[in-house]
Image 1 (tube, one colour):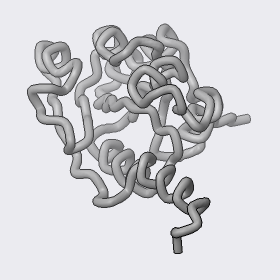
Image 2: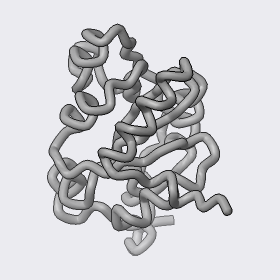
Image 3: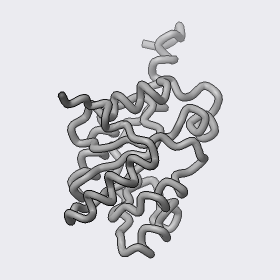
Image 4: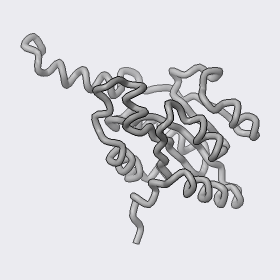
Length: 166
């Protein structure tokens, strides 16, 4: 029986899965992020990324890593739940949690064919670019959905409690 949670992989499981898929000629796409509150921008971004190859791997920032990047009030959703929500999407093939401040070690281990980040990242600042390009892969940025972000959603919810909010 298929269990979508089987798509949550350890680093070693992901390495073995990717190696096997590469042997069959599949193109591996990697992206990473916190994916704290899944929203339309995330869905569009992941769908675009998935269309760049045959197998989409998400490097998911751990709770500790997310706090380091986003501040002490984040994440809103614990890493285990964020991972399971992502694996429930048919466009996502694997989720690997990483605890480092950035995904460089994970990218170095997995050696994806395509590395994808949001359009707010200049290509020369994309972490792991050198590793992917050295291995013959490509690095791309994907346009973001305007005015859609986890921070905007959180701010909108918090403002609902203000007496002057409408």
